[in-house]
Length: 381
Ligand code: HSE
Image (tube, rainbow, N blue to C red; front, side, top):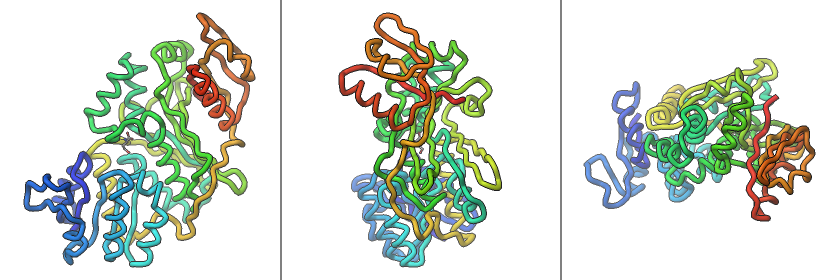
């Protein structure tokens, strides 16, 4: 099968190179921006791909919602298969693309959009057919894991850690999506949609790592904790919870061994029990390998990852609770239900009693709206 590549950045170049030696696949035209078509295999119009009868599939690796959506829709409407690593696209318009694919008998797979090389969505889409998925989540952003690891284990400053993650090709073009937790949130949205046919939307919560300081790291590391940015999703009766936030883990927790750009995805099946998948979550070759894996699945007859009934639902994060570690202005500490607290120099560090995720995130937003600084992380028990 000849595969066109839409985009020729970090991942696109990796996909193109891998296609040269992949079993049953060969590289087709590569879509680039006007002026970047400096080789015969590069084209600048989507029509050149859609109208090419030899092209059987396209790999969309451009990122962003537009023009990626229009291109993907055109490819699928022509009856050609589409795989993508673009989580922003699938989180925003994946349900529509799945419908277009079904209508035209084409495949639409996107396991490269979550977990880099880790076959998390691939696994979930198979597991949901025979088992009930109870909960899912994990470390789903390679950039922030790389940064947190570098800050805690190597003593790097936040800015240097971010620069290194960008240089290594882990970060998004605009790394705000990584450090704010939005990238991991999009990935947990996709995982919920694949596992339960429910794509959570309103009420989603994401707290990233931008507010963690070297003093915070020194404080919680001295107490035997390691910080990781984690995404979690699950069912609450008829609803779905889905959120991203920093988590402090005790030494010995599996997530503490997740270093550099690695991801660790978990899910719990009613019969399978807990399953853990670990591997490189970002970077050219790990992500390209996931794109190629999806293309290989198409050759094996796989056609869809989103269940046909997939619908958007509001997220309900009011019913999930954690103890939280919080650093905030000392004069606001009394507003939280405390297990223990200490304060020095106008700054309090405390551990809360169990609080709902929704209440903790709302409290942090209020402190920031007042001009105060706050860092919080769930304490893993
Ligand atoms: N920026 C993303 C990450 C790339 O760091 O995880 C892989 O999705």
